[in-house]
Image (tube, rainbow, N blue to C red):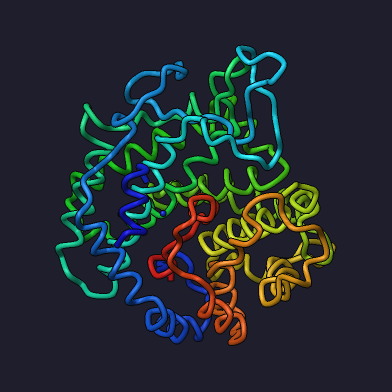
Amino acid sequence: MKKYFRLSFLFIVVSLSFPTIGKSNSKFYKEAVKVIKNDVLEEAAWAMQQEPITVTAASSSRSAGGKNDFFSEGDYWWPDPQNPDGPYIQKDGMTNPDNFVAHRLAMIRFGRIIGSLASAYRITGDKKYLSKIEEHLKAWFVANNTRMNPNLLYAQAIKGRFTGRGIGIIDTIHLIEVAQSVFILSDKLDAGLVANVKDWFSQYLTWLMTHPYGNAEMNAANNHGTCFVLQIAAFSKLTGNKELQEFSSKRYKEVLLPNQMAKDGSFPLEMKRTKPYGYSLFNLDAMTALVHILSTKENNLWNYKTNKGVSIKNGIEFIYPFVVDKSKWPLKPDVMYWEEWPVAHPFLLFGASVYNKKDWFSTWAKLKHQLTVEEVVRNMPVKYPLIWM
């Protein structure tokens, strides 16, 4: 269990409304269970031993917020060699290991605990997992001395420049599997606690949709815009906010897919980055998860095409050959974490289930499922596919 202990030490990630996966869904779900059951139960055993660690467990003197406020610093910002005490300067793609990330790691850890426990419950039906889930939910969303305030006013701060930024909203991408876990287990968990959790997410949704930071992130042209809508979709599904579900679907059809994906299925804005391979995988995972959440019989986004004929299937088809054989990737290797990708990406499993692509499933099954590299964990919005199928 050393790999999970390390995440803990660092402060460390169903569909009732996604019908339309087709007749193959049950088959692929059962096959997926066979592939990852042992890994899920092993991680759940680790999670059962973990006590809650929330944003109140660590703090930074550079935060402009209070004890219950989430705080993080921009990854690619460094001290200026010419002015060490002045504002930080940017080095795109190069992570500064000295920036404060304890709250982010605590949130990722929280998401992994809930996701693994919910997955284990789906496999076994053992109620011991529910009790542990409730313990962590109470700490993060209810208890006054440990709960997180439902906003991100102080996320992705930059020393000497910003006390917080809209770009920081991507940090709560790791709460989507917490929301999904509560959604699928809502009739199994304490009713009062579920109501409190839904209230927290309702408050957070209001902040996301009304604060200037949320507006800025919503209008981001790359993966940040995708992850904003993904969060709105996941959180509004839990809270039953149909208006925001419709907003998310419209945003995908009219903005995300047509503006981000090229005719060949690539993401040009991600391809321009210093880590184009990793960012392309990340954005496709996020966009596929969004499609998965929002698709219904009446509004099947898996089959939706833009007026130029672009669909989410094109995105999977574009990247798939480079997942099978990364040496064929047409661009330079990413500046960091090139060797760590790919892993068992959810777009392969979800896509296989929808389009009945056995080769996609086979590739997913063979790739790495136990995520131990911090950068990989941080850039996997869906780590527990069984709670989504």
